[in-house]
Length: 280
Image 1 (cartoon, rainbow, N blue to C red):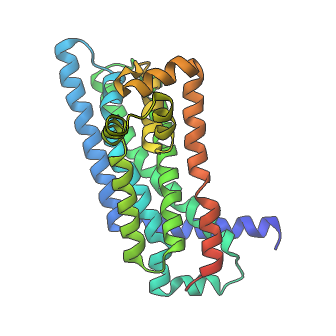
Image 2: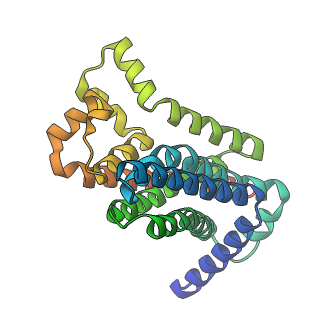
Image 3: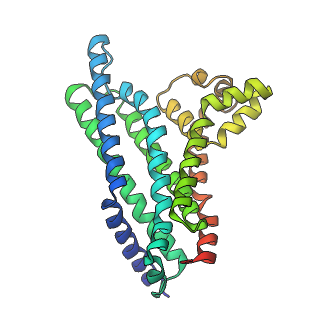
């Protein structure tokens, strides 16, 4: 199969996946919830800013971080987990694989289609909030706001990759979705509270504590987001202070690189599982 034909096939599969995602009730619900909560945080930030003279993008950017860490991984994990497993149960995956396509094209098509859908959903939330802030506030902190949007897309992509891994490895929709939800709870639990509790109980050295934080993409996202705001990493405790002292200005590109690595790592095992299982 030529490169041109392969690209056309991937593009066709991506458009199909995008169309299916837009018809997915869960996806629409996630989009509405994220947009409404983003607008609510922006409005609250504007109200507080009018009282204290701090209205702008910076205040809303700081408020959005925790919302993003809760909702965006859930969106990516569940959509990815449902993609292959649901079609496998419905029998449509068998029909797709009966066509002149290879597993890599199917997986890439699904990845691109779902990534486009997630980007569109997040763009709605960020776009509406940005318009509200520009209308009622000012453009102070716009660069950090746009940077957070880029980090959020990256977080959605790595969550989607993990979801595709569950979907390709597990035969049933319920099992894949349950594993994705468990992974989401695990990532959230192993955030600040989990690391702090482990450090206190096990007396983990600060160097190892920072290394453990890099194993959780949500923590890496939080480090990068706080650095975008030019805030002090003391809010992350000893691990944040150690990271800033050790890496300095290199910490932000390091965090972005780790997020990129997290986005790519699940794809190889996902492809291997999918090639072995196919539509079964």
